[in-house]
Length: 331
Image (cartoon, rainbow, N blue to C red; front, top):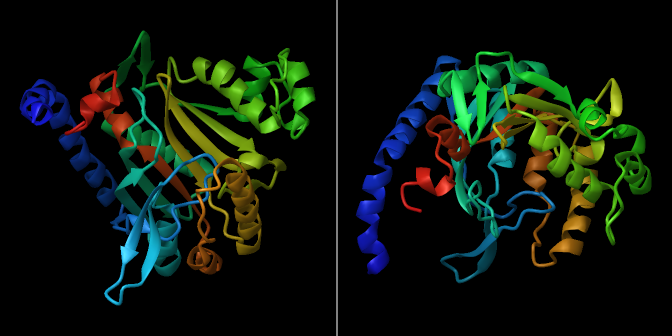
């Protein structure tokens, strides 16, 4: 009862931020409707929540009228379902979806949050960056303050390949060392930690040396990730060591993750099998079948690009709120 009685005061204290959030929801819909996107809704409790190796899912159970039961999971992203809709319709679609990621809690993470995703047939990675830049400018003020950073959104957003970022901030040939942790460590002048592989070291250097340096004066698209981090993205036809993927950083926040979508079901299945093996090694309780419906739809998916953007973090940037809990109605 004590917690409940405190809620009205807490909401009143944060109401200007929450009102801004509500206005931004309307602005999101206006932006995409003006561009001819179709708003869709997909199930939240699904048989297959995703294939991300390091994400932990909330588990529940479906009880049927005949008494049978089947595992369900709260999805970590609506990506699989939305791409099935694009494959079936050929339409550009968007969704403001609630998503869940267990074990995540910090000033910039919440276990339940709002993900804005959109998929645009015919778009390559460059044109999706153009559209994302236009979207961010439409939703945020021209100058954003985040901690001590002053980010000028009137400047062209930086487009920086991962290879160039590691050369600039780490002093390493990232793609040239792919799979060789000792070579990457030597070029970065760091020691390998016990049991640390190339992927582990890549993420450590990304977090410690690259991310703190980008998106501070103007937003930065960090593009062309190593192929090992391709997930659901196509490989770069100009250099198959890299994947057609970008993340967007603004004021120290990783705001969005995007792919030029892979449409080859054979290659996608191989990646799923690899990811599943790694996930089972790390988290044996995170077990579900491969999404056969998604794989069956892939041959019908037109060339397209898609993006997942953390809406709550966008609101944080718009309002200057230091904590994600400040811009959630009940937190």
